Every structure is written in structure tokens, then in C-alpha cells.
Length: 521
Image (tube, rainbow, N blue to C red; front, side, top):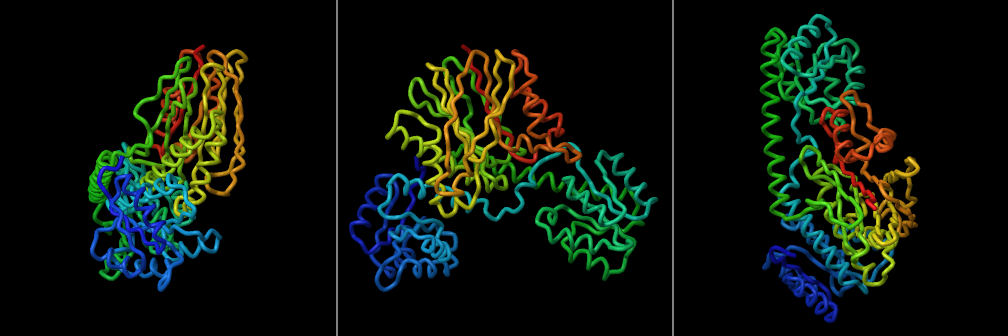
């Protein structure tokens, strides 16, 4: 359902194609504007508020590639969604399309449903980009009960003094005596603040700061120089290195603690504001990639766990489809990206899954997970932007009459299968490639005959990659052991959540998502 009408420019010198596209766009609540040549296209862009362009490549006077490049030269159209609709199909043509500045392309003769999916996904992504595309490092937006601070100083007395006062204030303070040691710690821990001396043997604080600035993972960690160097030149040099503050050592530990507290409070306020904005955006866009409730399916208990990264929408998506009264499809996917940006790609992937399932239902009654996966893979492979973002996908189809479960996966974690009667826990691994990685993912179906109290668990990698305060990963073996040690009365997802919270001190680094299925009869 489209909430407000979007205007789309259709540029093609073939009247039949223009009318066909305009007809279907209008029937789907879009406002089409037709142009038969580049000049008409430029005039429409100038006069109308266009939200997306569908453009042919081969045209007289000015071809589509040149038109696209010219459009992109105008600052007002740098982010305007642009799709080529063309008979050209080679890799070179696809490369030329992207080089010209297009977001995607679709080949003639085209499938109308596929084109509409691409249009809707691009428009939705653009809406989100307009609102939040300039926000950087959204993955750092979270709140913590105990903030980690790295203190670098080669003076043992100073280190001991400031470590004592910071720890007394409630901070988790880790110390280092040289730059090499500090860099190893930065790679192992996720610090909220770094405090560094300047004058040190071998490498000084300026060199340490330079190294951090060259790494996208570390450059945005708030940074304080703590130094005896009080010359104006030294202080200005420090601030020119994008630091948060410059504090003189003779100010004393109480001043340092006060400065740290102020910085932390400001960080908390800003992060809280951003998270609230994102939550409001999620609601206002009416976009969900995880359902509020699990489905009822006779003879089975089905539930899911989804913990977005500190409340920030991420790249995991979950869905359920009642294929008919006897068959239910269960979907778990994971887009490999940075939190908020991954979320709007997850929306596109979820749309492709739904479209693929509709396609399979129209042409087959076998409800094959591998067929659904292959159709999703085709959509993603052909989408110039989405295909650049790797994703995994697990699809299960449950039949309540035969008590069978069929499974196919694309680059996902193996599913865990616990046989209640045999008291055996095993893993079942898919052999499919990541979505969109190759044209033919070579997906296969695997069948499981379920008996009473048998359990299936599937999870995304945010679960096994969760880390403790000391950098240890939770790991897949712990997940298997958890399932293996469950008794019949324990809820697997509640147990998993409890174990993860204890292991990570409640600080997840990524979305944590899992689905469990239990046969009741």
C-alpha cells in the first residue's frame, strides 16, 4: 500500500513501452509523466516534482546513459532514483548503467511485478535516505550501564591515580603504557572514550591519534589528550586532530572525572535523541521487517526472538506465510550491513521474498523452499544496488498433515535439530551461496520428518558473534550446547536470551534474531 502518490518520469522513444509502463504505474497509485526524448525529459524534471525516473538506453539524439549523466550533474538530482529499462543485457551494459549514475536496471521484455518491486524498494530507500542519510556512525547509538575507558600513559604513578578515580566514579577503566599495547586493546574492546598522554617513549600521543584517525572503526571514539604540555601550539595541534577535549594533568583527577562525566552525558543525550528519531521514523514509514507476533499453526509451537541493536533497526528480517491451510513458510534473513543502513536494505530483501513466494504459489503447489530461494536470488542478482549488499536467508516449509519440514538456505547458519525421542542434537547445513552472489545459487531442499517434541532452532550470526566484555565470542558451539541441554519445560528463546544477556552483560553488538519450532503432536 503506497501512502502518498509518487511521480515517475517514463522516458522512452517507443510509444507502446511508454503507454504500458504508464498504465501499470497509474494502476499502482503512481503518477506517471511521459517523455519521448531527452529534451522532454529535462523539461518534465524542471517543471514537476519527480520522485523516480524509468529510462530507455537506446534513443535518438541523446541516449539514456548520456541523459543520466547529465541529470546527475545537477545538484538537485544527485540522489534521484534512476532505473534503466533496456533490451541491453550484457555485463558491460550493466557496468555502463552504474557508471552513468543509475541505481538499477531491468531488461526488456520485463516482468511488471518485478519492475514494481524495484520501483517501490528504491522509493522507500530514498525516503529513508532523505531523512537519515546524513547521520554518520549510527551504529554507535546505544546506551550503556558501565562505560569503557582506555587510559594510555607511560607514567605508572599518573596511571594509578587516574585509574583509581575513574574506577571509583563507576567507569570500566583499562590502562596501557605504550601505543602498541593501546592499539591491541582498541581492537579487542569496544571503548566509549580514550584518554591519552602526549609525551611517551617510542611513539607519542599525536602518533597514536593519527593511527586511530586512519581507521573508520576507531576515528569516531571520543578522544581526550591528557598532557603536561600547556603551550598554545601543542593545545591547538591537539584540537586540530578532531579530539573531544584537551586537559592539563595539573588540573587534577577530580577535574578529569568531571570532564569525562560531562562528555559521557552529552554522548548519552545525542545517542538517545538519534535512537528516538529512528524509532519515530520506523513508525511513520509503517515499515516492519519483523512481525509483532508469531503465527498460530496447529500441531506446532512457533516463536521468535528479535533484539535490535540497542533499539536501532538493523538488517535482520523475519516473516511467516500461510501457503495454504496445511503449509506454513518460515523465513529468517540477515543483511550484512551497518545497523540502520542495513535495515532499509532488509526492507528490499523482505519485499523480494514476498514476491518470490507469490510467484511460486502461482506456478507450483509443491511449496519448495529452494524454488522460493532461487526466485529471490534472481531478483537480488538483477538489482544493481541490492546485489552489492550480501545477505543470508533461511526458508522452512512445514506441513502439519505429514509433520514434515523442508529447508533450504542461502549462506545462512546451519539450523539446529533436536530429536526428542533419541535425545540427539544435530546441525543441518545448507549448501546455497549468499543471495545475489551468483545467478544460480544451486539451492537444494532438505527434508526432516518431525516427531512429537522435536525442536528446530535457526538463528542469525548476531547471536553467535555476541561478545563478552573481554572480547570472547559466544560461538556456535555454545548455541548447540544450550539446545542440547534444554529440558522439556524450558522455553528455548527465553533460555537463549537469558544466556546471551549474562554473557554480554546485556550489550549486543548486532541484531540478535532466532526462531524456534516445536512439534506438539
